[in-house]
Amino acid sequence: MNIMHRDHIGAYAKKWNLSDVKPINVKSSFSDVAMVTMANGDKAVLKVLSDRGMEVEENGSAALNYFKGDAMVRLYQSDERAHLLEFIDGPMLTAQVKAGEDEKSALIICDVIECLHENDAEPENLFKPLQEHFSALFECASKKQANPILTKASMVADILLHSTENERPLHGDLHHDNILHSSTRGWVAIDPHGLYGDVAYEYANAFNYPVDDRDLTSNPDRIHMLADVFVGRSGIDKKKILQYAAAHMGLSSSWRIEQGRDESARGVLRSCDQILKLVA
Image 1 (cartoon, helix red, strand yellow):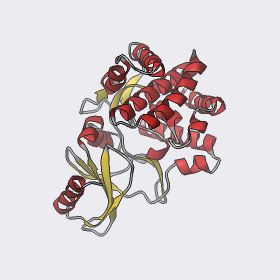
Image 2: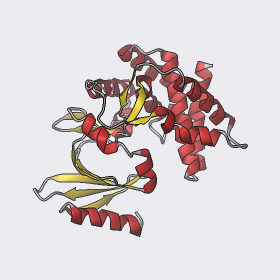
Image 3: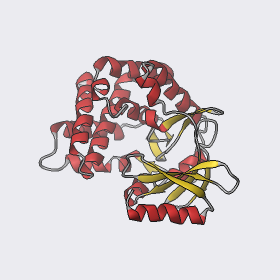
């Protein structure tokens, strides 16, 4: 965390009367996070967005309020740059994958999505359309030296976005690291992007996790397992879910390229390429 970001954390701690500020290393270019104690003595999490994070998560507060319920982290305070959030005391869902319970984890993702989507009302604030959300992929793929896998992912995304159906408000960034276990509430989603589009996209990001195991995320058997679980619970066409997974990986790699994280981008594209081959 650099000095400017420490100043942001400190300013919000003062603004919202927070103490015991302990920064957390979340390895994200979108935000800085700290454990804090509120005036009533309860633990909470302070999340302060970077300028890039404000672009990506501009509808985060609206999404937290829209999806509030059993499967969404509670929002205590917010403004355009920061969120003061409920502290979730348990591990990320990723821990279950690493413990050999990958299929069980996929079913938990389905549980969380179904709970979040119980609210089918139109949001008061217009969430970001998927077409706009994918702009970084289209821009990156249009460059002369673009990776051919990125170009294919962009073409798939373009087809999907021009043939959407069953559009609704989406969490928009649902994956194993963004689902945590609460000892009192069960599995809870965090960090929504607040998007609007085809419900199939809600399942896409799970294929990209765990991000530190590209052998797993590129394994055809694992890819089919996730898709089959999601199809079984959602009724969505398997090819469509896989296409959205590939499109999202293209987008994810584009963000990494923008940030100069070329090695990480290549890892994502490796997994993306495998999914593209499965749906060819």
